[in-house]
Image: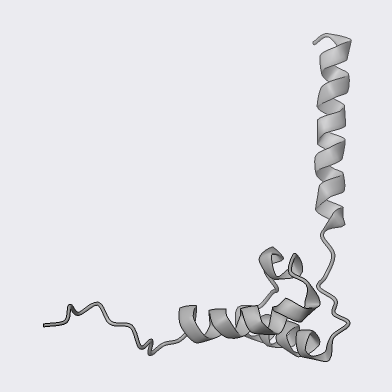
Length: 83
């Protein structure tokens, strides 16, 4: 393998390994966000990355929406057509 391809390959591998270590646990400054993170952890077993990308002020609301709609065992929406 040419030296330039080997260097690029090594750089890509190193960047991938570095990216794995940049994922940090969810931390919150807001009390409602902290409570939401704890509930997410308890409900799902881990905090998905999509929640970690949201600002603290949005975590509680986003979790309430997902928990109330997507995780609700008895949703109000039905598949029956209206007659």
